[in-house]
Length: 161
Length: 332
Figure 1 (cartoon, each protein chain N blue to C red):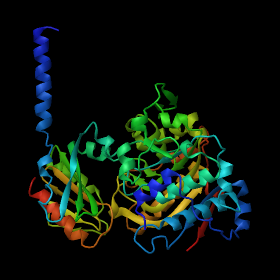
Figure 2 (figure 1 turned 90 degrees about the vertical axis):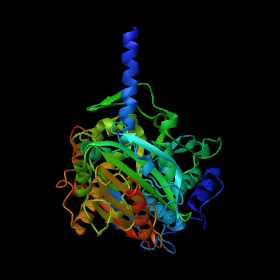
Figure 3 (figure 1 turned 45 degrees about the vertical axis):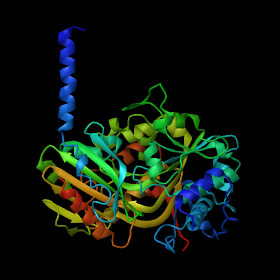
Figure 4 (figure 1 turned 60 degrees about the vertical axis):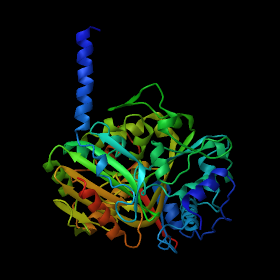
């Protein structure tokens, strides 16, 4: 390989890293343990791009890809040591992409939530969009007071976006 | 009460044995004989399955399984059906669908099948509980194990895929090494809507036995799902379906979306994968109508693959209601 080619390869790698880093991998949008009362964050935050999102939500990824997803980051949470939930933050290319996904979902049995540009609260989940971000928080079981707890966690995410 | 992980731990140790086996009054013999020439599908419901707690009761779940199997095979005891499905010495896989995490096959249901298989003469070490992803299995409450002598539980992403590419129609793929080492596979799907295919139940669950499911999502997964089920290793080894319909989902699938779930509180069994999927598609459509939503076709996710699977080229089963004998029992 010539010096010129090596230089080009290095530049390509650096460009890729810079682009990916700037693509909206919002790891810092996840509240740390204790930052929201009662909520503890899991150890790992996993991130997928448009090409690998199917590994996280096989069969569900196309909807986000078609709307222009750039990345999706996800982390587990636990409320008061028992209620398990997951926070998914989808970073879209544009706010219109986040709006497209949000509005494609039927608001069956939901209540409006004062979160971001628009939000909905369901029995065991909350979803909202803010600019190019779409955030979904899903609880894996029913628990007393879970609605208020989910909204509090959502507010914790919103303030970090 | 044991939590789910503790229950699986005991199951994997192979020590626990279910009770004596519920003795059900299988009095619906007229229905059973009329079903002889048709594709039989059995659904057993237990409206009290979530008592005393909000989660399904393990003993009631096991009783639902026994009732469904005894009804399907017109059997007098709960072990006999399994002796008709498997033979000692065979490796038996239980292919789960754990993509939905909280909407995955119930651990107690899987444990009950493992017990019945062992009572039917299958060695614990010849039973493999599996799915595509390790993380999915764990998140659904299954304890990974590959220890000799116990029921094994692991995923294709660790077992790997065969080198050879297999093909049928539009499908070109590599099979999980777990599938190829099994002699018999019990298909254990969950009922969900699917953002691409419309509905996912028996046939769509086979996307979890191949290396490249993401390559088969175009055109509402049609004809991919039907073609995939034509692959000989899948068509021949996957002999029976035990569907977990304790909780089902009518919108937003396959990702778990609790806001779109309902408690169906039932278990479904049968051999005809097409008939099962057809019945399940109708169930999802009915629930959508009840919730004020349009049909799946109207939503842009038609379940055309079910008709494709029944067509003259595939003949994987029937989607003709006149040729399906649906037997529904309530045991509450």
